Length: 272
Image (cartoon, rainbow, N blue to C red; front, side):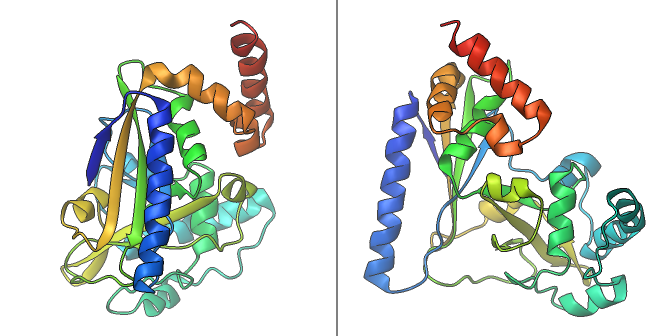
């Protein structure tokens, strides 16, 4: 991981422009597939990259254990939402689909729609959420800055830097699941994408910590940048993002997010 301490928001803008241009140049020079950067904002630079499942349970679950939990939620969710999730495979079918090696390929992740739906509604998830927009990531970093944090962080992640990835199944491996999934509208409003981290352990695949994968990565894959920005830049950043129509209402579309956006516009912006 490459960590950069910035003094002002404008410096982040410059770094994003440079990373974007470097990716294009690298792609043209090599003729290979280079992933677009994904971004993630966190309101305290001391927080690690963790999934909501890690934070909720404090332990790592096998893929089988977590999917069994999801199957248990399905009848209640279907009853409340009056929606039938017919394409979700049964637990035996799920085990068959992932196979002995636990291969979870982009576009072939079983029950991806249901995973994303639950993630967007607060159910603990092994999906780590990212966005294709550095400005959406900036909003989430500055929206609710931790009072004790001196800096927020915005991560920039490139999965494929040379067109392929290597590694052993016994080592933590990050897999990007791609943007193409039918889901809650927030998925599209926030330009969301997701990654999971897994490894083979004691005969089963388990969800692993992204931090462990990044700690052991090489220069030719899973490139990660961490940009630390002073939280004193909050008002400037949120005001700038408001000009781009990036705010709570545009990203969530709920009545509560409308009230949050209106209070920011009418109290904090007009009051200055």
